[in-house]
Image (cartoon, rainbow, N blue to C red; front, side, top):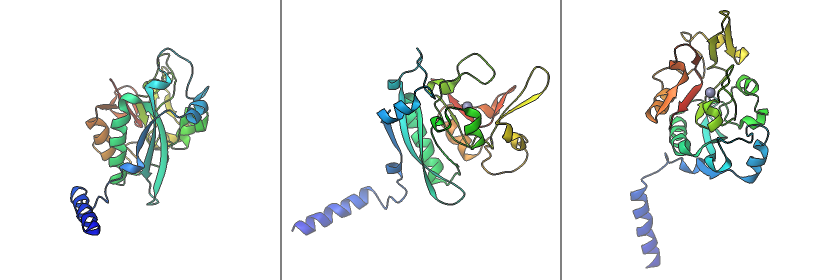
Length: 218
Ligand SMILES: [Zn+2]
């Protein structure tokens, strides 16, 4: 009798979750900032300020896929306002085998943006100013994500007409007509998912091009 009942429950569950081999949600989770992470962030991605505090931020565990065909595990700190959106986006990127090389906390690079970009890191929160400017970046509020940063550099022309590329090693990837790995293009899966979730792409900006950058305006 008991076995029969268990069998019925099992079939019922299978009906509700029909062969959920595509359900990756266990590999993606949202947490309040754990003590160990909070300590790691101090003096690196986190600086004492009046704009953003620990309770505004969330710690995400993410899975991502790369060209080696394997599942990789990443971690990210973001604003709680976009935590759910990022989980949705990264589940879909993973499901569709969109290649992302690494997703580490910028603290692993001592919050040195040039270093993490040279390493093609993908990240979100870092309390810092916009490159070459005085105002805070959307990263400072955990509302911007940089994806595959070496292959999708930040490009602008300074007052003297000189081209500034960040990271400096990203120069070969400034020509967006070329085809290469990890490239973000208008209309591709990564672009579509971020736009669908209300983000703006830095690759669409007119004067500055920030191909790695998606930001959310709450
Ligand atoms: Zn950015």
